[in-house]
Length: 351
Ligand code: SAH
Ligand code: SF4
Image (cartoon, rainbow, N blue to C red; front, side, top):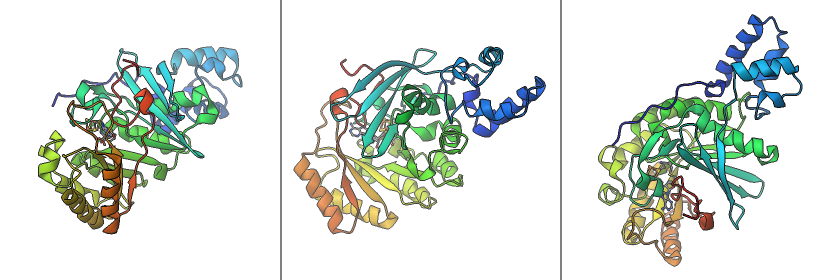
């Protein structure tokens, strides 16, 4: 595994938790002898009612806006591409200040708008079926670069504010815990983005130290475990991380979560889709009271992997259900623009 390159230093107020940012602003307001209510006015412009630049905060005197621009510049993610799928899914490609690229995917469904966000540029874990894994690890994202994906979507159109967040974009969130920790606070805090913890899902292959830290947080964030195989032998063939954190240790660690967990299971022909696999998976799901999401394999990972045919996926789901497991076959969204799970590789969809 490559060792993480260090993310740029916290050089924006948007890298701080809402409490940390409030303290910083309050201090500045006091130093300048400004009225105390200014702190609230400034603070809500970070996340609650975001603005692109301080100049847009027309409730403030012009001289103050200019000063704020110099003191607390509001960083942005540069939108390089926004592609709309036939099914309404929208993929964004953001260019970061150092030239790295990351992606987010906005998936509307009824009144729900789920934003799938990235936590790293690339990923070191090399799951064979995943396009991000294939590109390798570039670097960790900062708190602003993570929560900023939501902020940018709101800046484009406040009506499009996501109702749900899933850490299922590029990267392994629990290998970037310090930044993910702060970003979770920003996402959830009433003076941040105010998204309920139960509407925020962290997806992980099962990084044990990170799972402990996530479980220790008081909010009930949801946990999805990318299981993809029901035995160590089967999992090793497609997920190298199994060598370091085996699935039994991962599932033990998952018992620390109070909320119901989800198993993600991408169906790959001949690798994890036999009847025996279904039975072994049912045993694990029952033991841990887990919901099972069955995902059709999307193109983008290692060549030579074939998706399980849909009728076979349905059989597999039926077998789980017959054993009392709640299993759902996920609809693929955004396939035409390479925005589906595991297809995010920081490229233009047409390449
Ligand atoms: N690293 C974390 C989060 C990002 S991956 C994790 O692995 O959980 C987000 C989801 O996309 C995971 O469930 C992953 O297994 C799934 N995925 C990856 N490649 C896929 C593919 N080719 N087809 C379908 N789903 C895939
Ligand atoms: Fe990384 Fe998740 Fe892709 Fe595996 S599935 S390579 S952990 S992003």
